[in-house]
Image 1 (cartoon, helix red, strand yellow):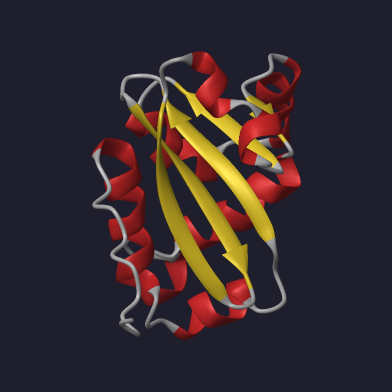
Image 2 (cartoon, one colour; image 1 turned 180 degrees about the vertical axis):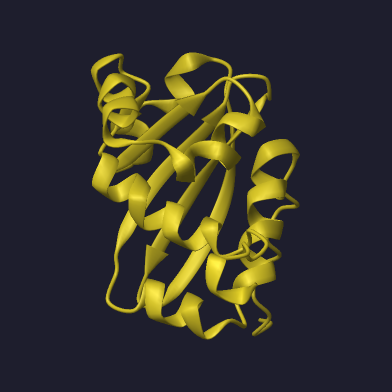
Length: 140
């Protein structure tokens, strides 16, 4: 018997992209603050990609799993036990969502594109840490 951990499968497509973003912010102090005491499971689905990303945050650890989007049953809440879900058409939509107002988020929730918005927001805080810093008026 070997004491080696089983190898994690190599992520593909959108899930690999999300894991890269999360790995890029893991060393930041803001990251440690954002995940402290949080627990969630969020499924992010980019409609133009064959892979969705299931992000699990528990006990200060964050993991990303790649989920094939076909057949549609692969993404069901009963199968994956996700608490939050966000389906978006393009990557630019996801990256620009930080500037959305409350009204736009409410329309997305009403249209079924976002479920469990508070859970999606937890993951959104973490992904936002990868954004380049913006210039504020005070720096001029």
